[in-house]
Amino acid sequence: MNMELSRRQFMKGTGAGLAVTTMAAFGFGDTETAFAASIRPYKLASLTETRNTCTYCSVACGIIIYAKGDVKKGEHADIIHIEGDTDHPTNRGTLCPKGAALLDIVHAKTRTQYPQVRKPGSDKFERVSWDYALDRIARFMKDDRDKNLVARNNDGVTVNRWTTTGMLAASATTNETAWTTYKVARSAGMVVFDNQARV
Image (cartoon, rainbow, N blue to C red; front, side, top):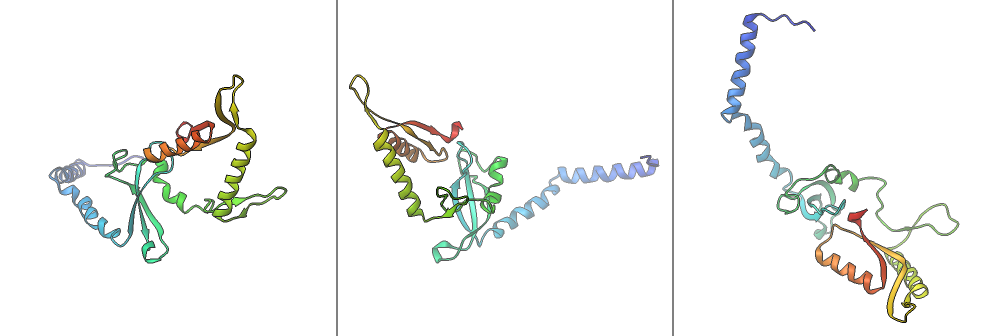
């Protein structure tokens, strides 16, 4: 592209650019930012704010979830905004690309929101209740433990090892929850126990 530019046009353009950068240097450039910052609290004022932990990895970043509708009043809460928690010591308000996309995951049509089971011989999953799902999992675990628990080793020492079932724990939890999860798994005799952070 060939551009014809006279000396006078060059001086006008340079002068205008210098004026704009000088104004910005004196602090007038932050007017839009300050205006946007003054409006932002009103944008989220009517929403319910909930602090939570990002579900992605072992970093456990703090997030703030904004929902329209108050559950305490019996209303359906629709999540409309998720952002990093500036008061959280881990991430101080920042989120990685996966954390920044949490809102899309919450509203994804493919997201599983309730337990499902595929019965033997069936080609599709059927929705079941939480009570049914938890009772079924507990029954399978109990039956497997009763069948495969190694109470004593070859030397007759009590070991109580359950090697046929494992547990993969979540890493985005509190220390207390992680400690309790570990104690439950180990007290049941589980040897295969790992954490999501290593996956």
